[in-house]
Length: 440
Image (cartoon, rainbow, N blue to C red):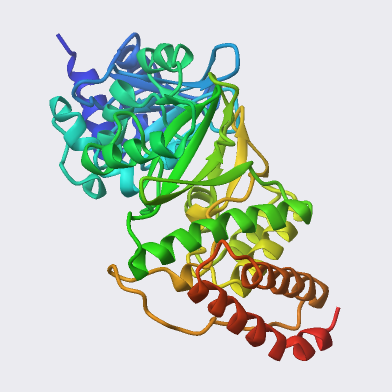
């Protein structure tokens, strides 16, 4: 039976959250030995830190989960324990780890943020796993809901982190999603299935229809267009080709990009991109989006450039990587990529440490994407030029001009897309003198 002193300690910790021993003594009007006896050996009290800097918290229970959740990194040859999550009152978690991830968090820890199911595939997760009793709309999921799903079903998730021993064992043995030869006909069947059913365990973000597959032992992500030859379907097909071209051109310029290829089948166009968060068939590489990093360390959510430069000033990422992000931001602006949200640029994350920029993804002229199934004509939107780093503006402008010229001269695009490219080339050419005069 809980003693009166222990009951008072737990009640106080539930109301106020983590407290040091001296704070407990002062709040309860008791001595240090009394507090020590009250908390000794109690499983419902979490000790945070060691020695004189220790604090204590009341453990919080998440139905269906163990008292503490293990977070594992999945490598090429197995798994490694990275951290343990202790749910605590009045909310949030104590992250126990020997890495920089250790600490207290009021919500889902930032390094797990990108594991939330969302987008085209993610929103199907609740209906795929009704036995978990989670809200039917993933946008309503709180941190506890996410952890319940990750603990039971979060195996083929982005990056290299999994939550729970069962998920880690399944991840290590995972043979790869949808093994295929990689023909257009196969992909047409998988596209139809993705639209009708979704794929259990898949949680790639983004609204573009897609599925995951494994071709010749290589995990890939496959985006696809609607079938048919109507204007909207053709425009999406053009944009998938344009996305592949952006990876080709940026790769030629020395940026890190994943291998990609375009193929057709069943009246659809497919863009297949190697998953850069996978190493071989079973190994994985860690990643974390700018969205997660901004939410934890910056809090402005403005742009790729703003967030990476803020992180660089804090010493969390290199100034070189921030310069690369700025160049990508400018190139994206010049090609009409109006979808430059912070989830579309990521960093490597290994052993709790932020590394280099991840390879480029989702780089395409979204300004010309159909809206509500209709093609809406609009000119290429131009970015607001600044006097800072004229050399960077000029390099991005030159790359974008080359990009649009390649589309204009490529017969695989529709005449409509080549017209857009011709007009975009003219628009960029019209500001060439202004760009040339920007100061270095």
